[in-house]
Image: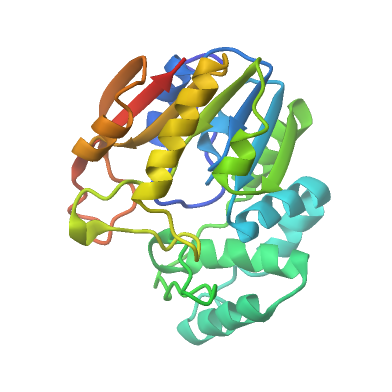
Length: 276
């Protein structure tokens, strides 16, 4: 893809999404036959790269379920999702009714559409679950939530051009599939910038320091086997130590896209650690 080409926007809002730094990530991603992403998130990286084959994984089954439903059903699913984006559905009582419905639903199609609804109508686009695995993000109070039709169409276009393989798995399982010829990009939940900024509620099992260190170890092991790995994270003392054996480190300054205070979005330092 031409580095000057317009970026393909994900159809999901996502805390820590990489659209703003995708050009920097592409600069350090080498060519390969397949890109593996153990933390696919909103998909900014796979949408904006040109590999023939992708293994896109996440521990969040709701996220993967949405991707699979859109990939399998296409335009009909987009039309179905659009029903949940009306002035009537953008009201606090309806939001909580739909959130409860989502938490009870066993129907893959309904659950996927409601996950998109909650993503666009919930507070700050957060994806958060309680200890029981119940989605618990409060109502977002947006004037008119955006229905990402064009972005969903762009996803379908990507799926027509490349082989997209989605799976629900943790990072250890996903990385175990990596072989010579693959390239790995890891976007784990951020290491907190401070003790009060810890955020591990993305999945009900959390992602703490032990998981961060295990990921760095696996990156070193894969690199030793000839599989390059790129990891993005906050640039902290912890990550500097965890990624000490990376062959290359790039440091960036990024303005936060999702913040509780829209008028006070601070710049933070991020690191791209390249193991090869």
